[in-house]
Each structure stands twice: as C-alpha cells, then as structure tokens.
Length: 288
Image (cartoon, rainbow, N blue to C red; front, side):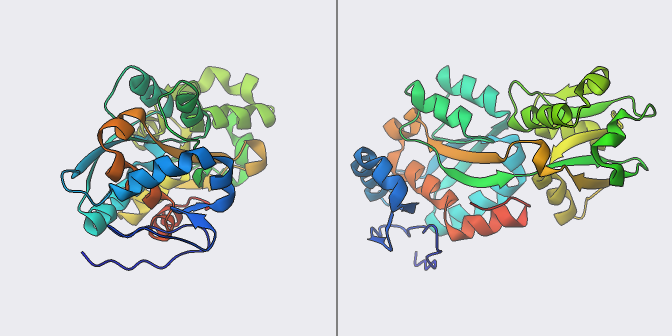
C-alpha cells in the first residue's frame, strides 16, 4: 500500500515498512521526550521495524468511553492505511486498568487521563511513559428547557432533582466534574442529587433517556451525536478554571509488547499523527 502523510509540526505517522527519524523526532515523539526516555528508544525502534511483518493483522485496544466515537473513525482510518484491524473494548479508564492488571489481553490502552497509564507503567503493565494525545472538555448537557447561561449555579436550583456524572473513582471526567462542583462551592448543596454512571457514556445515556434533569458529559460525546444528525438537547462547556485540564494519554500494554509488538507500536504512533489529530479536533478535543 502506498501511503503519504505529511509530517506535522508535532508528530508523524510512519507508513508501513518505512523507518526514519527527522526534524528532531523519533518515531513520532518529540526528541525532548525521547531524550527523557532514551533507554526506551531501541525498544520502540524494534516495535516499528516489526510493524510491517506478516502475521500481525489484529490488535485489541482498551479505550476510555469518552473516546468511543472518535475511535471508530480512527481505527477505520488506521485499517485503511495499514491493513491492521483494531478491536476495541470501551469503558471507564479505572475499570480497564483493573482488567489489564488482572491479565486482560489488551495490546494498547487509550486512557481518559495520564494517571491510569502511569500506574500501569509503575506496576510493570506498560512499557513506557504516556504522553498526551488530546485534552478533553467537560460540558453540562440537558434535554430540558433549562437556562444554561446560568452555568454551574443552575445545578443548585430546587427544580432539578437529578444530576448525572461518571463515577469519579473510575472515570476521570467524573473526577473532574466533582472538582468543578467543589470549586464552584456547590458540591455539598447538590450531593444528594448526584446520579453516577459507570463511565461517561452511561452518564450520557442517563441524560438522553431523561432519567436525570441535567448532567456532566464529555464534549466529544455531545459532538458525536450532532455529527451523526442525532444531536438532542443543549449543552454548554463548563468553565475550564473549575477543573483540572483533562490530559489523555495512551500506552502499549505488556501484553501488546509481548504478543503484538509491531502493530501495537504502530497504532500508538498513529494516535499522535496529524491524521489522528484531525479526528480528535473534529470531536472537540484540544490538541497538545
């Protein structure tokens, strides 16, 4: 397959069987990062050299729920470019990490934060430190006729009985939603109204089905519905000063390193490429 992808100012997606470093980048990562992990360079170069080898036709990626819709575009694009099929398992990042530590055969982990990938590295379930592929945005979303211009203060209104958010123990977007409530001085006032979804997708379902009055969701989920012509209700971004920046990272898992090193490394590389960045931007992510 002939494939030409222009090098961006930050990363490059290397076509099959093409090995090169240029412009201060090593396998798509900034030289600054490579210098910090120079001992990993040989390891990753071996990954890339194996990328075009026959027999590596499929990998499995554990993917944070907020990335689900973008990932469907990404894996289709990746398959067309490389011939490698990416199977996906979606869920809360914390739950996926537990599954990986318990031996789940995931080749790549695409997280909703940086802490969970770093925990895999700490315990020997990932090979190298994660770097952000995108930054997520938190929104308030409702199907009801509510005045979202009131912002977070709206949540304290006595007319609102239920507010959805993802489980803060397992889902980074839920964790940041709680921070936003606390920093706005609202958590104690609305705590009894909170309804927790296992992940951000389930929180979105609570909103879509009308089981709650309003909820916190990922901007990527809301934009996905609009892109499919299925957009419902209205939404407003949460003031970014009220929560920590949601940096999202990805890593090759130990299973991927041991069983599918070439295609796993290529898919990780691809997530930082310009074609992938274009997809992330389409779904409302802020790019590194």
